[in-house]
Length: 114
Image (cartoon, rainbow, N blue to C red; front, top):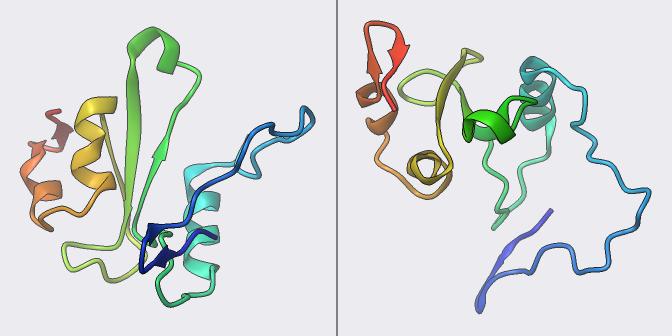
């Protein structure tokens, strides 16, 4: 897993990526991905977010929307799994350091408003 260093984050996978490489998340449900994140060891300075993750589904090319999932309640406690559909641009609200209340502010009567 990538870690934050004194000079910033480590770099990700360097090209070329093996032609036979496949994401371990391919074909997994959101619940399975949440379980993976919850079971990952917590390492100091890890860049792995244990509460938010993004899914690009089969509809992404057509709609341009991603689904952002949050594990936990308003205090990021517990196992509750919620989702919001949004544009890639709006997904940065959740995938970079954010105000904790932003999640609740994006919901209106149980529907995503992004």
